[in-house]
Image 1 (cartoon, rainbow, N blue to C red):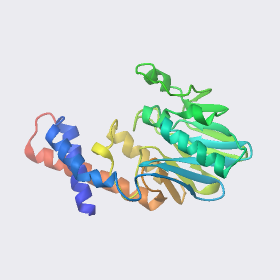
Image 2 (image 1 turned 45 degrees about the vertical axis):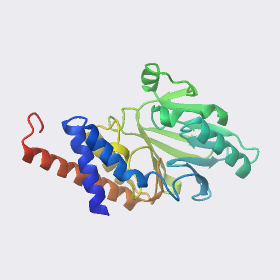
Image 3 (image 1 turned 120 degrees about the horizontal axis):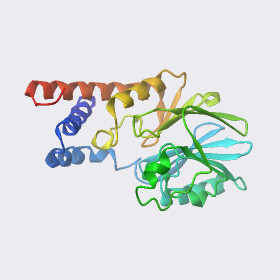
Image 4 (image 1 turned 120 degrees about the vertical axis):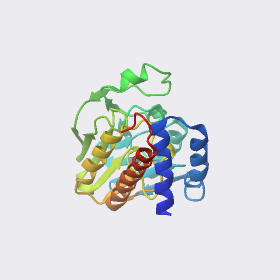
Length: 264
């Protein structure tokens, strides 16, 4: 299975290198479709990771909820339907508690819509986000109350949340979040647990993406929560990094062997 995944990732990487080939994309997408749907993926689930961190899964999307003395912190609302489901779960599990802060991991619309139903007091995003939002229809994106740049440590209700800026990787607005007291890292579109990403991770600058993964792997933590599919351990992120490196190596080896002009 691991070899199959690497081959599929390599095929997708080749498509990215030599140009969009509709047939290859369609074949790869069809082949990996079972990874995106099925038992354990479709549907919703509210899960407790520990006394401080919870996670809500809506189909193959996943976010995190941090319990603090000042209220709840939510990272990524994703969309209106997911946020509505999350609001019901929060009302059930934390009656009377408000969402103190909503944080956007990056500007992408599939991670930033629907937050208004959570009625957060504060909304945080990278300072470059409005530049991208203003270029498209961004209805449903709750306007931030604070913009940040670079690494930023947030202290909310007694919980330290380290927002780690990952540079040009998956956009140039991407943050990972490290909660040292819980030995946990949350990443958006940066690593998965025993799964593949669609089309080799859209909007990805490969060198920066690899550097971002290596930076996160260098952190001392145990629990790894990605924004899609299951959550797991640090070892899962290492395995995913290794798979991406190997697929990229195979793709370039094949391209160089074929003698494709202009590809290095």
